Image (cartoon, rainbow, N blue to C red; front, side, top):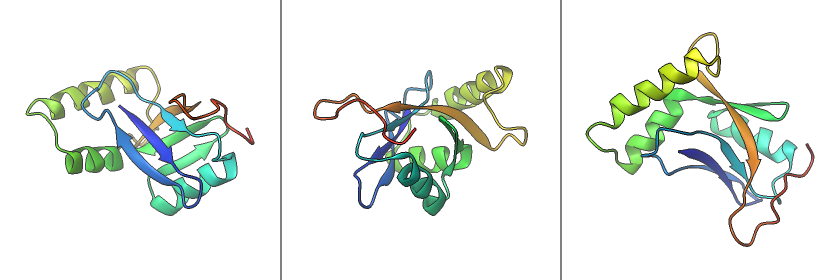
Length: 117
């Protein structure tokens, strides 16, 4: 799964491929610069931006996934994802946020770079 930032004005946060609990990152289109990325996270309450990464609220990920609909075993797979990330040091000390790489959106029609970083 990954968090996608969509649009330039106003940018929004969407959870994509939410049934895939084997990977996690934040995907950002080229028209969203680092200031806009920080703003969309701050305004949504979904997390914060720190340097070249983001800290994404685990509770918000869970909420968005449940809104999209999950498989019966999704909760177990998500718990394993959180446990693995915790072992690797990719979860905040309080256990509330995933550390995520911010990557350029590489879908067709995007330029594949993040401005302002």
